[in-house]
Amino acid sequence: MTTSGIRRSARLFASALALTPLIAEAGWDQLNLTRGVTPYSETVYDLHMMILWVCVVTGIGVFGAIFYSILKFRKSKGAVAAHWHENTLVEFLWTAVPAVILVVMAIPATKALVMMEDVSKSDMTVKVTGYQWRWRYDYIGEGIHMYSGLARTSDVARQLNSGIDPKSVENYLLEVDNELVLPVGRKIRFLTTASDVIHSWWVPALGWKRDAIPGYINESWALIKEPGVYRGQCTELCGKDHGFMPVVVRALPEAEYKVWVEKTKAEQAAKTAGLAQPAAAAVAQAN
Image (cartoon, rainbow, N blue to C red):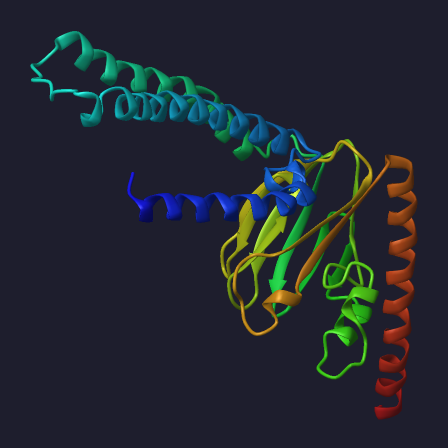
């Protein structure tokens, strides 16, 4: 190895050492795919890890053979170039082994794809509509609908010369005014679309994201196993406020979810009645 090569290797090694504390601070869970809280996300995670380790083992074998050959049969040790001839067995093996590996990976991948598309036997349906720059949620059959946009605390803090330190705002740019509330243990079908431009609804803990396309409906499903708050964002560049379209899903136990449904229905009914009264009075005056 030349002097310049040694120096280059030393610089690369020093750079790797400098990144080590950052990697350690980030944690493995932030560097890898998350497992999530749905059968969908768990299947994707398991498939991802299986293929990752197949690639790792394959890489170790291939690069190990390369480096061994470089070190063992280098010219400085007197190695002489070999004269190769065809070998039917070797050619068969390096064709058959990758084919077998691909088949082994394809079988569970195909099962996962079939499972992901199966929205049958859903317990409830939620329609998700993307707008510039917020979301609308319609609980089909429940009569509940709402708009969900960036929380006021984040919206104020993001303004130029607001005087507010974004670090002081909890869940900055990841909080909303109206959360999507869902029950735990139910299979939920999502219908995703948009009213203006293409958006994309993404919550990592659910294991998938879906493009919201005007005039088109994409289907997805989730069965949330654990109560909690799960955050996501729009992941399709949709205009100047694309970065301010967070998604917040709050998963509740069944009993708490039913209480929330009844409360929300009552609030929306009262609001509708309150809006209807001035309109009715105006019509009566006009007559």
